[in-house]
Picture 1 (tube, helix red, strand yellow):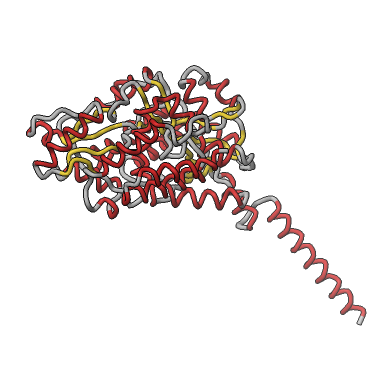
Picture 2 (cartoon, helix red, strand yellow; picture 1 turned 180 degrees about the horizontal axis):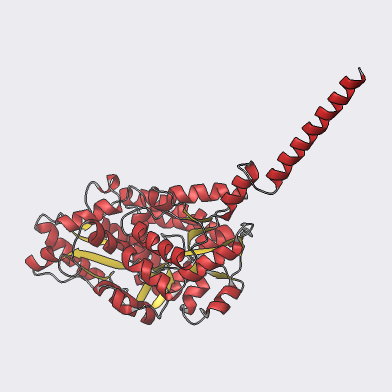
Amino acid sequence: MKKFRILLAFLLVVSFALEACNNSEKSTGSGDGKNNKESSKAAKLEIFSWWTGAGEEDGLLALLDLFSEEYPDIKVENAAVAGGAGTNAKAVLASRMQGNDPPSTFQVHGGEELNASWVAAGKMEPLNDLYESEGWNDKFPQDLIDMVSKDGKIYSVPVNIHRSNVLWYNKKIFEENGLQPPATFDEFFAVSEQLKDKGITPLALGDKEPWTATHIFENILLAKLGPDDYKKLWTGDISFKDDRVVKSAEIFAKMIGYINDDHSSRNWQDASQLVANGEAAMNIMGDWAKGYFVNDLKLKVNEDFGYVVTPETDGYFMVITDTFGLPKGVKNPDDVKKFLGVLGSVEGQDAFNPLKGSIPARIDAEVSKYDEYGKAAMDDFKASKLTPSLAHGSAAPEGFLTRVNQAVNIFVTQKDVDQFINALETAAQELK
């Protein structure tokens, strides 16, 4: 019996020792334990975006390659979410941010999409120290820095600039019919009548997603109010019952009379393709359309398609900027800042933007890397009055934009100006 007790005690000691050894192994992160997997996951730099299409994905991959060359020891995860022109990605991001599981950094439009959604909610870290250390305060236009700032603190780094107020047109159609691209709304309607008489759809629209119609309306508003008063719509300083807003709605209603019948079943790429194919003459769309024409359809700038600013917006530049910031609570903030440093550098912006079809947010990028359109847009960006886009989340909060999109969607079908203006005025309560 005594020998049995000694043997039992010995076995218990061995068992405890093995368990202690196993626990020690897990706590130090060796082996294949759960802690080691979590540590490995935390070490990755997760870049969250909706850049999965032609051109934009190429630009993102070029940017990530550049970062990996400079920081080969930092593991990068491309966490892009496809579909819905960013709608799917934004839904995933909202769920993660609300669950305190932010990606290392994420794509967000500068302006209210950044400030109202994430900065006001206390979800972002300021980046003034990064701007100071990188010498960026005079490398981005002040109007652009203001779009990514709140209460004097800067919260994200712009990687690109897209322009909303561009009218694209089929060169062959215009040349064969002896037409000039319109600079005013009177010219637009005169050109449209001539095209309609020839059996050509004057204006292509694909509003399967309603932002595309809102995109046209915001350009009319910019033309009729100018950049300063256009901005005052979103602060409540100018009413949506202002005569210039009513006039904009009337012009919008008249423009809708020249669009393709199947607009509600098409997206913006489908509408752009109508212009490329010669089935429609014009399209009002941001300059990501140029990337689509060139990268997807293999068309040539100023040979197959041309471009001008939308009617009566010469000297104005409606800005859409994609930016990345530093969410609160991420486990690798120093790595995030390294990525933002590359993203905001001349090299980073010049690796990304020529492929994306956008222009750099910096004013000192290498002009020779950009095509004819890019060079012209870069010059305009430096010289024009900048203003944020409503349709793309920069000018006003998301709740208001949702209601505007709904009102626009109804207006495209019914063309009731009074009803539309009342709907906008009601939606403006979201701005107070």
